[in-house]
Amino acid sequence: MAAKLVVFVHGWGVTDTATYGALPARLISEAGRTGGPALEVRHVHLAQYVSFRDEVRVEDLARAFDAAITRVLAEAGPGRRFVCITHSTGGPVVREWLHRMHLRTGRADACPMSHLVMLAPANFGSALAQLGKGRLAALKSWFSGIEPGQGVLDWLELGSPEACALNTEWIDTSPKLRLTGGAAPVMLFVLCGETIDRKLYDHVNAYTGENGSDGVVRLAAANLNATHVVLEQPAPDPAEPLPTARKRLRELRVASTTRAVRSAFKILPGMAHSGDTCGIMRSVRDDGAPHVTVEAILRCLAVEDATGYASLCAAFERENALEQAVGNRLEVERVPVLPDRTYIHDPHAMVIFRLLDPLGRSPDVNLLLTAGPQADPNQLPSGFLVDRQANRRSGALTFHLNHAVLAGSEAIPGRRDGEIARPALVPRPPYGLRVEPREQDRFVEYWTCALDAAMTDLLPWIAPNETTLVDIHLQRIVREGVLRTTRKLGARDFRSDEPGGVI
Image 1 (cartoon, rainbow, N blue to C red):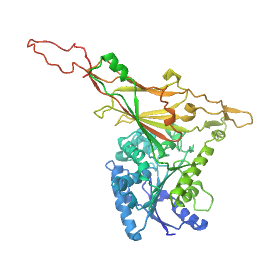
Image 2 (image 1 turned 180 degrees about the horizontal axis):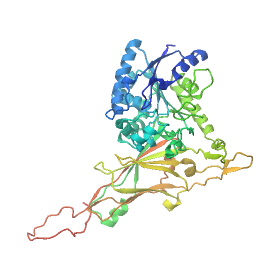
Image 3 (image 1 turned 90 degrees about the horizontal axis):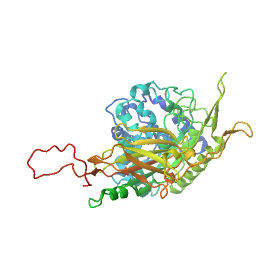
Image 4 (image 1 turned 90 degrees about the vertical axis):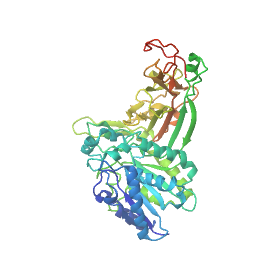
């Protein structure tokens, strides 16, 4: 078996290749000791990855990565392929390169990368990105503490147009690409922790201690197993009476549902985003002691074909289920003098809603989730919504949801025999959604519409540790009176005219 050429791509805000720590050396020593594939290591140096300048964007980094890897492969000799190991924002950078240089051009079979192993990648962004450059620079848990560049920060904000474009492309086209098949497969792996390093927790910002995340990136935002749902409001018919049209347009229809091709996703126990103690990369020591990150990477690199990839996906899924089993969700933090603190780590999910009218604009509406047979927002179970964030540029809404609350959960056992840390959770299906205009009876307006929960339940589209991207296409209703002609030449004030029927 030929030696594997390994390229490490660091995260955002990094200014020193020391960020890789002992991981490269440890992988080489472990591979040799366990009889695994021989590894050669090449760094992508800072000159190719400057993330703290405002003018640099993820697309620019992808082009720079292509130039850098072309040089590395030229030095390695003809026919060589490489393995890429990334941390944090390095994952989206290399994915953008993969799509831009190979998938969009129909050159997937010629891709020189065989394995992409992403450590805590912000594939769907990070909730922290909206805080702004100055506040992020002050957070110990945010990469290296350097003030970040706005260009990359814009991509990382949840629901950004750039991240949504890359991820919808991945979801919609990956089932057709057969990336793990053929003579030269391209295999993607995501490894992420859900441990909060309490020493790095920022008491002013709850995102650094958010359940379902590693303190920076949510599990659902890292995972490439995702779903894209398109909902459409029917088109208006000018021949319809207004009451009939309003009633018919009230029903949102499911235009399509697409699921990304199955990809390997592993929750690494005890791992946080950064830090020397439990950081997914920085905590690795070249001392021979067992480390979950090293072990998981070597398992990924050992996969050579579609059969092995499917087997590893299944193994990771079984291990994730065990890691998040009801009996393993209780965390107890020992606090000197004060009473111990307890945390329950339920599986979470993210849903990104993009509301668009035919002009591509974000309409002025409210989006409500509903529950129960009466489709009532007041029937939603307590604690289901962990966070709601609107993208400042696109208006996309990202909901971070406690999946255990929505789907129901067994009781969480306490620390002592017979003790219950939390009683069983009872779900309140079916779950639906409703879109309501903020203003009505306007010359150009939007009409109330809803996904009938009795016919279509949202919950099957929302999976634990995954992101669901929901596009809602609304009709922009233009009513009579916006523009009229008259044959009366006398002066007439038409400011008080009421809107008429649908044009």
